[in-house]
Amino acid sequence: MAQTTYTTPGQEAPGEIYQQAAQNGLGELAAVYKPRFTNSFLILGIALAITIIDIAAIVVIYEIGFIVYYLVAIPIIAIIWAINTLGSANLRVYIFTTGFIRAKGRKGEVVRWDQVQAIWEKVTRSRYSTSFTYTVQRADGQTFKQGSPLQNSRDMGLRMMREISKLHLPAAQAAYRAGQTLSFGRITVNQQGLSNGKVIVPWNQLSNVAVQSGKVYIEKDGYRLNWSPVRSAEVPNLSVLIALVKSIVQGQK
Image (tube, rainbow, N blue to C red):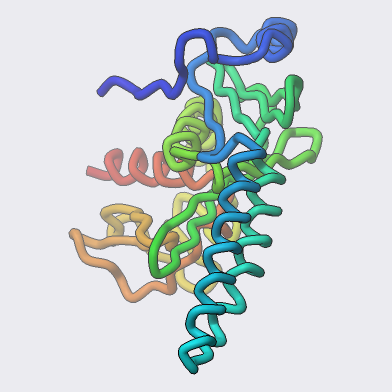
């Protein structure tokens, strides 16, 4: 399946970003992720318009003898939204062939895929939306968090996890074959089976590892086992874990 590229001709990236990419051997630009609102004047205008309309509504309702207290909170919410949105308006994540650049402005932090030690996926659900946040830890210990409010943040995270898996999976498979125990947060993998720190499930009882609503489950013959699920945000390199388990399960057949 072809991958969607979120770039537009003439607006791919500033020259300084391309220069950083070339200096660090990042290869070709594949995608650019940015917030929905990037214009500071538009953000302030929206917040001001909401506040004015709300004040007018309060005055009208008060004149006819009613008081709607929750309307008083709307300007406060609008101000908080504007502050948060302004703070991320210039955030960009540029995905290249061999890494990415996280920038606020015309220069940013460079992370090559082969420098990544771990990546975490956090899924936050509300009544009206689902947001995804991805924290990348570089080998030097520095972390980079990106996700909401970037548009298409789920696609960005899947790209990151896919590239990181390509590099980490062969080493994980070799360690498993050598009889080592691999740790993915609370979840461990070894030749005896899969463990969540409380229960070990032998490989002959396991058919799959699944992620739903930000939680990691295990399956036996298509059914979830009575196994305490672990949040995906607690599992470093979740995509590596899933790929490793699938390769082990397939090898058992």
